[in-house]
Image (cartoon, rainbow, N blue to C red; front, top):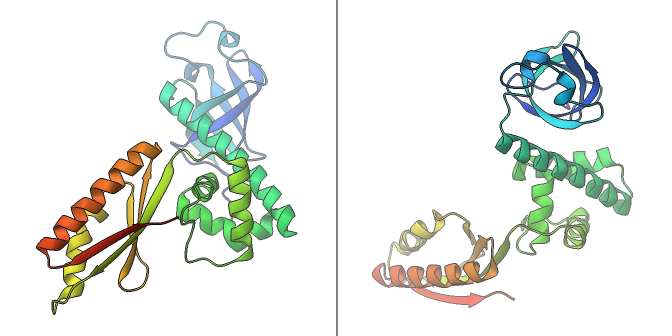
Length: 253
């Protein structure tokens, strides 16, 4: 069931609907049909003489939820309790959500389904897996291992739309490692060889069928990713020698 009311403590995007002498009525952009109120005491730190020096009708801003009345559906909000960093982060998140919705609508049209059908079939799963639909579009746009275990018609269309409309904030490169050992406890030795690398941020190692393993490095810049991958493969090779594990690496196309 869709969430139709925020919770106390949430940071939300609002549109100023009506500025009054002692506060402002707003609508909550992420919760259609929900209205809120910013009391003049919650507009800015210190004394506010003229509220219109801070707020204007039609203005979009970010507020913190102080309290929620579920029976009336009204929300008490604060503008002054949100810092600049929170405002920038929330606006960026909200814009990404709007982009994701438009892309999902485009995808639904291509698949000849409704938006709700797409959300039920795979959208909600993507939301859970990535934290946001837009993050899933970013990953698909990177061109590397987008949900590798999934085989479905929507996936190909999703990747195509992502590459055409989204610039990923990172690059992903990788290759395949063949690792094998003749020791009786070879499997454990291979796991030990990969252990330190798997714990590094931005690095994933996936089993690709004995004796192959897929290694993927994600970084903000291609050059950094290349250097990191080279160093990781070197570390794995050296660790493999100590663990009696033979390691061979090949780049993926």
